[in-house]
Image (tube, rainbow, N blue to C red; front, side, top):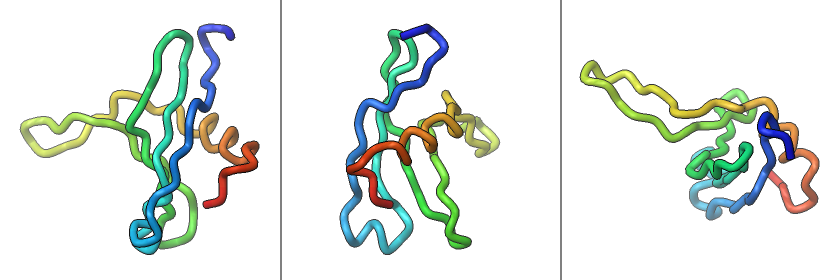
Length: 85
């Protein structure tokens, strides 16, 4: 794997209760030799899929994501048999 590939490592489905609130599941990916955990897949009120990433919150309350490889992760989810949003 080249250092510039994002590879889906695991997908864990959310509970039925969480799904009703739009939370679909949790994702872990590999990027080179790094493992990136804590990525959350959600369905927005308009029906589109969205990823939320681990983040820090600054003093003014703004969130800053640590990572953001969104498009590649969503594409790879669609390639997995066990992925059912």
